[in-house]
Image 1 (cartoon, rainbow, N blue to C red):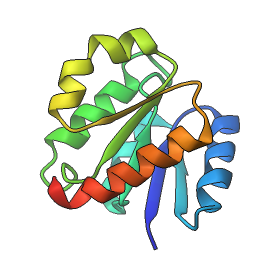
Image 2 (cartoon, rainbow, N blue to C red):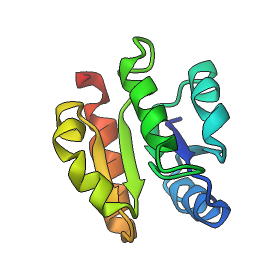
Image 3 (cartoon, rainbow, N blue to C red):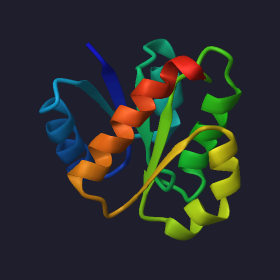
Image 4 (cartoon, rainbow, N blue to C red):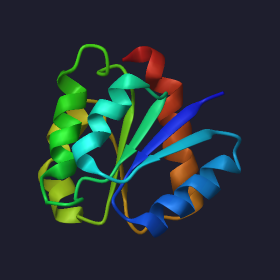
Amino acid sequence: MTRIAVVNDDTVFLDMMAAVLAEKDWDVEVHRESTTAFRQLKQNPPDLIILDIRMETPESGWNILELLTLDQEMGHIPVIVCSAAVRDLHAHEDWLTQNGIGVLPKPFNLDQLFQQVETALSLRGDR
């Protein structure tokens, strides 16, 4: 079964994501704290990571993303950055594209979410 990790400090958002992703028969795990998320992801690597870039601090998600892209064991796992921080996403657009990271600005509809997830999962063998 495909495992998707969602990293976000918003409990309501995490509950919603877990519910809608589970409808597609994906196994979903949620991570609420940026300080422990990378260690937990590394201990039990998922097939896909959906990551908010603004969590406890404006840099929290970016720090996790940098660790993920630099780690040899984790670098092959596709990541979708899902955030309402549209300016931050735009400012880092080139870097995100160069590193093959998907972008899903909030708010989004479920079709956009499912399309991003399917695309990322289909590309995971190419990374």
